Image (cartoon, rainbow, N blue to C red):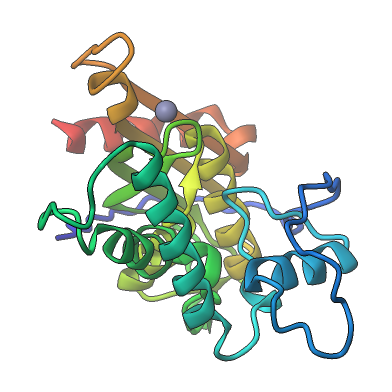
Length: 268
Ligand SMILES: [Zn+2]
């Protein structure tokens, strides 16, 4: 369920450039492929083929990067089989009798599907189709979207992160607008990857900045990290709040204050 709220106030700012994600810096990772790089690459795991393409393109493949453009048709099914077989290895190393234990017989397959098709799908699938509309009405008022529920997993422990995000947008006449429900789809695409909250808010801001080219952009994320509650210090009350302010939200303290007070009012 997403509850959207928004409100307006007047403002008239200048222009602003786009920020895009820069992704340099590659690190070599073990390559399990044995010999056989001949025309028939039958024995080569599909993950190795995908990884080689990414390296060739000198792109990054961190946990929260999207690698969809390097995956060829049909390869996701093969990746599913590969992850399943590696998960079987993990269960085996955990000394779980997956043959006799009816509860864990299909766990490896279920987990592989959950990773690739649900909770980490934002790594393997292209960005959702979202149409941007020109700002024909020349809206130049503060828009707030949220709270949008976000679900992710931390890159450190692969434990759940559950929280809310609020977006503030200050459009100008050159901005593009997107439909309210589309914010949730774009944000879900970013969050459906192993994430680090500080990096997640930046990725959300970069994506919306590129799509909308607003005059100002604000993102606030407030989330529970289950790795704090389930393990480690087992602190049930720990939450993390991150924000990113850009453009007019950075330059104009009144705008920033107005946005934050509206968000805080709705947090209740
Ligand atoms: Zn963690």
